[in-house]
Every structure is written in structure tokens, then in C-alpha cells.
Length: 215
Length: 215
DNA sequence: CGCTTCTTTGAGTGCACTCAAATTGAGTGG
DNA sequence: CCACTCAATTTGAGTGCACTCAAAGAAGCG
Image (cartoon, rainbow over all chains, first blue to last red; front, side, top):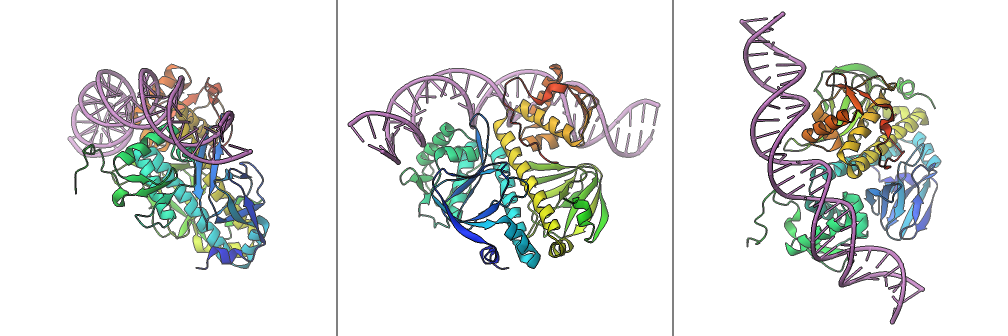
């Protein structure tokens, strides 16, 4: 299966750049382009009237987003300064006439994005705060393909994370403190943590955690 | 924009039937077909190991589902006895070579399904139990295009609803009782309710006009 | 260095949870 | 048609986790 970048290369495209916090498109807008991330981090989100916000996804280099038809189903904002490649939506649709590869690839992308969101929903609904944060950190580590022992970088703010995990910033802060105390994570500055190896799963409902049993 | 049913009619398709509770496909399976609902109700869900379950979506006649590429991103089960039209996935992909209509339509479907799920996530994260239930009942009423005054049917069990809204069955039951006491809903048997007209909004001004699932 | 914004800490509360049991309803066979 | 069984749903009691409100501390930015 060919790489999506090479498949899309035949469509019109050009580089664009957004600064930290900048709006890329707004929910409800009529879509004209889709994007591929070359550098940086982008968030997809839904905004409420009173400032409440649900972050749907964090996207990283290689990820494609913005493939909408009638209207944008979410807003997109730059978490950090980002370099994007912008593709004409019309051009992409034309490509689908030439080969099924494009359709196949885009379907696949849309599909995995949907699957991720579904699992996201599941985590948020079923996991307590601590495990949500661990899940997030592990996911981030996998995204960055970081070796254990190497720190994981958080490009996003605490509020971004809490809006992603369905927590308040206060609760998130407390959870992070607890994880440090328990030795599961070690801060390297405010936006970088080293994760302990077996952080993948927390013992369910097992509170001998006050005194760490030496292994 | 042509109707999706007529567009898909050119692909190979045949009717299939599932009974209440029957599995249509399982998460992770290699997909071979997609479906359109002719009659009945289908649920998409993620199953946990310990029986926990997150229902992603309830689907009704006219809805299309199962457009996956690599593997099923969720399970599909029949909520009630259902009549489906099954389409060959390969056939659908071939169709995309003939006209962009198919691609356009399928993208649109995938897109709105994604948008619905995103809003679902938002509701569950931000709304208290009572408002989640009201949101669900209103959504269901819109699905059924029922006039106010006409009862809304719930094809699914209480557990289905609670697994959809991220509540326990106990909490759901209590919420329903409270809504009855407040006169907002009137039961017509266990699986049918008459909704009071102004149920759309609950006193505290915190409904976001956007995006009920579907249609 | 002063400003603003982001993050952390503290105190107290409420909502939805768990555990447990009663009640209803659907399905089955006499 | 009616008793019986089993699952689904409802009700009750009590608790804990994540919330809100409030304020202190830290970090970015001119």
C-alpha cells in the first residue's frame, strides 16, 4: 500500500504555517482544503458558548486532517507553531477518479480517526482520573516513539490536556503530583516527563501504593 | 446531491436479516461488507474484557454503517430484529472509479458519523446525568420525526442507554423517575415516553444548539 | 522588573457511584 | 390461562471521587 503523502502528491498542494494558538479552521466553516502535518502539533476541538471546550484529538507530524464535505465537523487550532501542507479538497476528490488508492487511503485515515475517537470516548467514560492521565502519557510516548528512559514532551498546555481527558485543570494537576510521588513519572521541566517502564497499567483497586513494595 | 441508496444501487447488494441481540460483526474483524438499515435498530460498540461496554452509536433505517478498510473499528449488534441491505466493500470501492458521487457520499457519511461521535463525547463529558438523558430522548424523538405529543419509542434496553450515556443503569433509572415526577416525560409502557414540548432546554441555560447526532 | 497568564495547592461539597435487595416483566411449559 | 423462572429494572442506603470556589505560587513576555 503506497504512502499517503506520495499518493496525495499529485493533487495541488502548498505549504502553510500557523503560529501557536492560531485558528486553522472553525467548526461549521465550508471546507476548501485538507492538511497534512509536517511539523508541530494540532488539536481538533468543539467549543461551547461559555468557554467550555472538548478536545477531540491531538495530531502530530504525518497525520492528515480536515477531510470534510459539507462543513467542518470540528475546529482545528495550532497547539504549537506548525508547518502544514495544504491540499485542495476539489483536487483530492478528482484524484479519486484516477485510482482507488486515494479513496482507500483516505477512507483508512477517516476510519482510524473514528476508531481513535471511539476509544477516546471509552477511556474517558470508564477510567478514573489517574488512569486517564496514564493512558494519555503512554499514548503520547508511543506517538513520539520515545524509548523508555527518554523523556516524553508535552507540546500542549495543562488546560489542553484536561479538556482532552474530560478533567478540570485542578484535578489533572493533583493527579500529576500523585504520579510523581508514586515515582511513576519524573518531571523534566513542566512540559516533559520520564515515564517508568511498567506504567502501562495500574493495579486495579490495589492500594498498597502508599509504601512502594520493593521489587 | 443524489440519494446514497440510489448511488449504491449499482454495487452488488442483497438483503440480510439479524435477530435481536445478534452480532453483525466484531471489532477487529476484516471487513467484507457494509450495510444500510432498512428496518430496526443497530448499535455500534466497544466491548471491554470485564463486560464493560461503550455504545458508540445507535443507528436507524436509512443509516449506513460498516465502511471500514483494514479492520472493524467497532462491533455492530442488532438492538431489535433488523433488515439490512449488505453491500460488497470491493464493489463499493470499484464504484468510486466511475463517479465521484460515491466517494462524496461516503465521505459525507463518514464525516457526519465522526461529527456525531465528537458531539456525543462532548455531551457525556460536560453534561450532568439528567441533561444527558434529556439530550438522548430529544435526539431519539428527532430520529423518529415524532410530533410532540406522540410517544417516542425506545427500541433499546436500559442498559443499552446507560452504556451509551456513560451512566449506570441505577442512575439512569433514578433520572427517568425524576423526569416523570417533574412531568417532563410520561411513560407509555416501559419503552415508550411522551415528551413535554419544551423539553428541549432545561432551565439553566446550557444547551448548545449544535449537533444532535445523525440525519 | 512588573505584568499577565498558567499552574498548583487547599478546603469543602455534591453527584453519580457501589453494594444490596425488592419489584416488575418477559418467556416458558404445565 | 396461569404458575413458575429468570432476567431486567427499580429502589434504598451509604460512600468516594472529582468537582467548585478561592488563593498562592511559578513561568512567560514585554
